[in-house]
Structure formats: structure tokens, C-alpha cells
Amino acid sequence: MSSYLDQYGAGEERRNKNIVRAVLGFLGLVVVVLAGYFYLRNSSEQHRLAGFQGLLEKKEYQAAYEYWGCTPVKPCRDYGYEKFLEDWGPKSGHTDFGQMKVVRKVSCRDGYGVGWSFGNDALHIWISREDQSLSYSPWPEWRQTWLASIFNDCSGMNRALPNVRPL
Image (cartoon, rainbow, N blue to C red; front, side):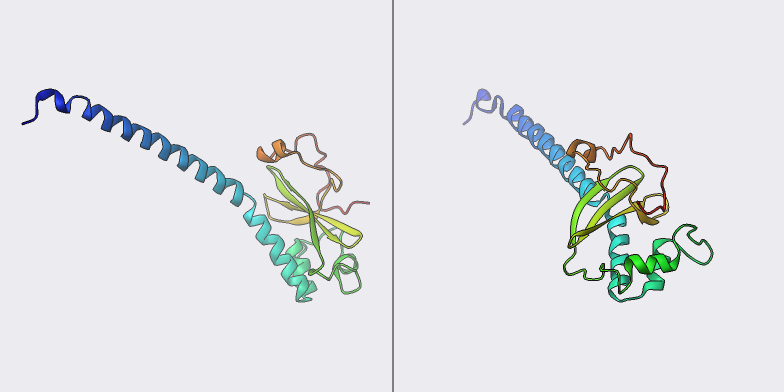
């Protein structure tokens, strides 16, 4: 026969284990949510780039030009189709995506930038989060620190150059 004191503290020990499990479960959930956010925060822009690259690989230049954001309804004032073909067409040197390397990625509140290197030539592309339009990056040589990339911070950069190819 057990005595009254044999069960003393058993409920408290069980409660402490449940508290520890709850705290560890909450911390695990926070880690999973943060990892998912940082993994998926640029996914729509990366899909946009993949679609643009796919059209160029299929040599569908008119569709790629419209994908760039230049449509008959909303033409690009400073970037005509002839200039687009100079940059991305069959004679441009930017057609071998098998040899292409990603040289930089920049994540900001209002857009996502990526640099593609084709041998000695690099093109820096900017995707606006507002309307998913593509353009050349206004800051091709800028490097983002890891701390700024965590907070999507591109403060202080000149944002007055949308849809303009760098000189």
C-alpha cells in the first residue's frame, strides 16, 4: 500500500515537462516560420525571372519583350524592341543560359535584383515588387550586406531610374 507522500511532486514534475515541451514547440515553430519567410520572400520575383529566361531560351523574343513589361498598350519609351534584340537577341551574346552564372542577388522592400554573368559580360536585372516589371538594375555595382538583406533594406540608393538601362 502506498503512502500519501509517495505521489508528492509527481504532478508538478509532469507540469514542468509540459511547459518545457510547449516552449520548445513554440521556438521550433518560430524557427520554421522565419526560415519559410526568408526562403519564399523572393519566390514570385524568381519565378518571373525564370519565365523570362525560359522565353529567351525558346527564342520567343516578342513574348519575352512583353514579359519585360513593354506591351503594345504600354510601350517602353526608352527601350524599343530593336534595342531589346540587341541586348537579348540571337546576336547579343546573352543566349547561352547553360554557361550563365548568377553573380549577385539583392532583396529590397520594393524590388529584387539579380546579376547574370555571361562570360566577361554581366547584366543586372531589377524586378519591381509593385507590378512585377523587369528592368535593368539602377545600381549594377552595389553589394548588399547580410544585415541589410535580412531587413530588405536598400535605403539610400537612387531609385529615380526605373526602366533605364545603365550607361
